[in-house]
Amino acid sequence: MAFTLQIGEKAPGFNLKATDGKFYDLSDFNNSKFLVLFFTCNHCPYVTGSDEATRITAERFKSQGVKFVAINSNSPNTYPEDDFEHMIARMNNHKFPWLYLYDDTQKVALAYGALRTPHFYVFDEERKLVYTGRAVDYPRDASMAKMFDLDRALEELTLGKEIALSVTNPIGCNVKWDGKDAHWMPADSCDLMEKPE
Image (tube, rainbow, N blue to C red; front, side, top):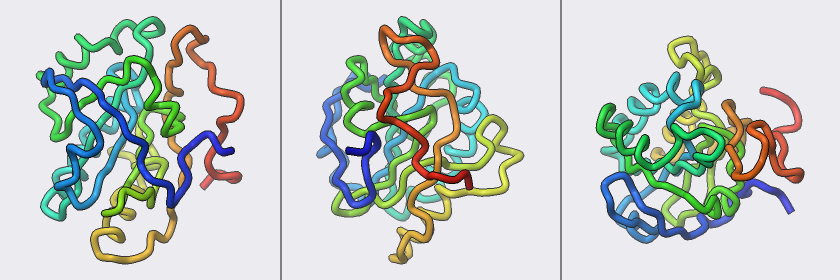
């Protein structure tokens, strides 16, 4: 069984607290035609280097019914700055156009098979997975990116086209699993593509 959610599989449910103090589950986003869930955090340079590019994408596709929701599953025992208080501060500072949810048990990261930060999952109207992987090919400094896989996938999805490339390898820091070394990854997790793009 693959570690990461496979194309065509339905989005696993969740109930998580957001930085606005409210709890959200998957059904709270039923009024959005399409859903982008992405695993992120506060400290990772691949996140901080690409968040503004992600903001542009989220704002670009908002009018086409695409909702962005961010999830932080990193253990604060590995990186204290990934705790909930720092999440609130980060949202207050940057005012990102997405909800920022806290997966403190890491059960949601396991359900989705999140590999890295950031790691994107795009779901269609039936909440079936149509794209997973990276947003850009150089997230550490998105201004240097040459490939915009998330934008391409969302363009195809919103135009009713088939997703030409539905799986890419996410690029970033690995998810920080509680009680494990900072660089540990589950044994059954691996690159999503056998060959690098």
